[in-house]
Image (cartoon, rainbow, N blue to C red; front, top):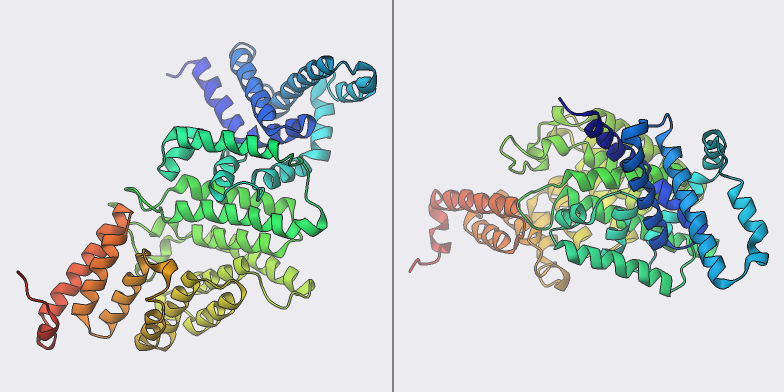
Length: 447
């Protein structure tokens, strides 16, 4: 039986996961320094570990942690102000801050948190995802501050050494400090660009969890869960932004397939082969509701068309609404990819558009589009290009060519599960080629 101390520590860990981002956000507003805010929040966590096993978990543990961190912040500010010898100038400000914390602090603190916590979290999200940082640094800092993940957990998720992640986080904080990035919401003229950065980071985190770039696991559910949670938080904090709801819809709909994306042994199961009865209907309903909200906001703003995340969510919705693969509205998906290619053009979008065209209008039409991408530099090492080409060649009965494409795709894949899947498809193509006497002339000599 677990001891009371062990149970208390587990309770503290659970509370910390939920409250850490809020605590850092509140303290960062006071100190205007993310590094200091995180240290003071950690001090509050240590205080809980010291006191709660003896006194018990408070009725409102989040408020206790915030109050403790605020006391530490006030001590920190006093120390700085003493160093700068500016007591007279800041005396009134200190009294105002101290008034927030009284002996019976819980009720007063709850009121203060209700007024400011949303703004504080939004500030923290925009600061952690500031464009002055590299994409990798933004992702690491976001997961650290807002996801509550440890450096070790982030390192394992992205398959890089823990010191590398630690350095990214430290450098990110230094960069924000050196650039004098304010802990505040961007002004109207900067909001769109900054919001795009936030959405990009959450999209990156989810994608890495949904299909891992490298390693032995095809999926990393913890990353998907954190990105989805943060997208929901952002949708609550920015309820009038269409693309925020578009991203939330996309992640909800994609996450709904998670249980069906692998078999009992962990092997990948491709979309058209998945057991749709295993798709999470609650997540689908949430995703469709978020998409409807995104569409309503886009129409109300006179945008004329959906943004890239809402368009991708619309594509995911076509799959979610189809009871069977044959019921999928592929012409609509192809049209949506046409719109996405106009809104956010990229070689990867073109490759996905080719797949949709192939499903809607036949593999020959899709192969023509894929072949146009063969010399695209951005796709030179992208294993899904030869994989898609191999699939279309198989459908056209050109098995020997398909085998070579699948073998090339497997050689480029860095994820072990994907490499295994592509290798199996190459073997299947080889068997089909051997069974086809007309393909004998295509087969190279074996030495």
